[in-house]
Image (cartoon, rainbow, N blue to C red; front, side):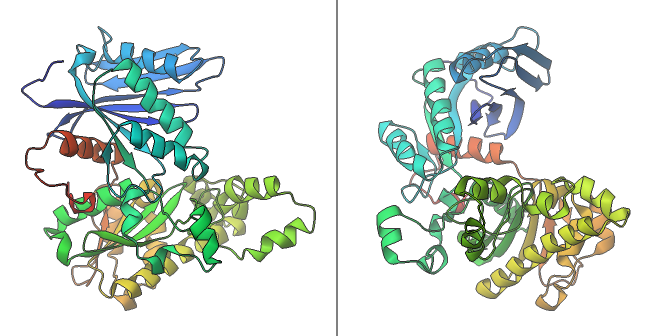
Amino acid sequence: MSDSSDGKRILVLNSGSSSLKYEVFLMPHRKSLGKGSVERIGEEKGILTQSSERGALKVEEKFSDHGQAMARVGRALTDPAAGILADMTEIVAVGHRVVHGGEKFSNSVKINDEVLAAIEQNIELAPLHNPANLLGIRETQRLLPGVPQVAVFDTAFHQTMPPAAYLYGLPRELYDKYRIRRYGFHGTSHRYVAGRALELLKRHHENTNLITCHLGNGASITAIEAGRSIDTSMGFTPLEGLMMGTRSGDFDPAILSFLEERGYSSKDLNAMLNKKSGLLGLSGISNDLRDLEAAVDKGIRNAIEALEVYAHRVRKYIGAYAAELVKVDALVFTGGVGQHGIRMRERICHRLEHIGIVMDYTANMANGSKEGAVSQPYSPTAILVIPTNEELQIAFDAYELLFSESLKDRRRTSDITL
C-alpha cells in the first residue's frame, strides 16, 4: 500500500438500497480528487458516472448487485483516461455513512466485527438504510482487504441530547423494551456546518450556541449548545419534526386511528405520511421548491399556503430552540432549500426580529447560494448560509480517527471543527 507524501487518499462511500455514491479526498488538505455514483443497481440498465480534474466517465451496464457495482467502481477509480487514482493501493482508509447507530455510538468508530454486529442489530430502527450501509461496508472489505474502514453515523451527534429531549410521553416500557425514543438524523451535516460556522465567526464551541437548519427534501433543525446537540426536530424516525418535501412532519397522532376507522391500512398511512404529504401533498403540485416558487408567482393558492406552512413550522422550532438555548449566537441555513432558497430564508426569518434574529434582506438576495452572512450588522444573532459537505466530514473523521498524531486521547466528534 502506498502512502503518498502529499497526503492520504480516503474513499468516502454512501451505499443506498439501489445506489452507491463515492468521493475521494486528499487529507488533511480537505481536497476532493473526484467523485461518482452508481444508480439503478439491480435493474436492467444501471448507470455509473464519475468526474474529476482528469475528465468525466459514464458507463451504462447492468449491475446485478452491490458487489458488481463496487468492483466496477474500483475499475472506474483507476481508469487510464479519466480515473481518480493511479492504483487502488493509494486508498489508505474508507469512511462510510451509516444512518443508524442506535444508543451504542456517539462517535465515529473504526469498523470491526463488533461494530458490524451493532449496525445489524439496529436494522429494525432503520430497515431501509442500515442493510444497504452494511452491504457497502462488506463489499468494500472484499475490494480493499486490509484497508481500515470507519463508520460515521447520522444519529451519533444527537446522542448528547438529555432525557428531557429524547424521551417520549409514552409508557416507559416502550423505551425499556423497544428503545422507542427520539434519535435524530442529519447529524453529520449539522456537525459539519456547526464547525464551519465557528470558523467563520472566529469563535470557540465552548462559548457558542447555534441553531442549524438542514432544509432539503428531508429537513431537520438542531439546537447546539457548547458543541453538543441538545435537541433536534427528527425523532424515532425521520418523519417527525418539520414538514418536508413529501413527509408530513408533526401532526396529531389521533388522525391515524381516525383514518384507520375509515378504511386506511397501516401500509396506506405509512406511504401517505412519508411519500405523499409535505410540500407535495399540501400543494398538490410538487415537492420541489423551485416549482412551488414559480406557482406562487402565478398566484396559485395551494402553493402559497404550502410554503407559508413550511416557513411557519421552521420558525416555531427556531423559537422553541432559542428559548431552550437562552442565547443564540448564530442561525445557520444549509441543505438544498436552506442554501438555495433565498425567498424561503426570507419567509422564515420574517417575524424573528423580536428574538434578536434580524435578516439583511438585501444581503440575503445578493448572497444567493454562496457561503456568507445574511444578517444585519447589528443583529444579536448572526444568520449564516453554509453549504453542507457531509462527505468531507466523513473523510475528516476517518483521517482524525486513524492517522492524526494530535489525537492522543479520543475527542468528542462534536468538538471537531473544520
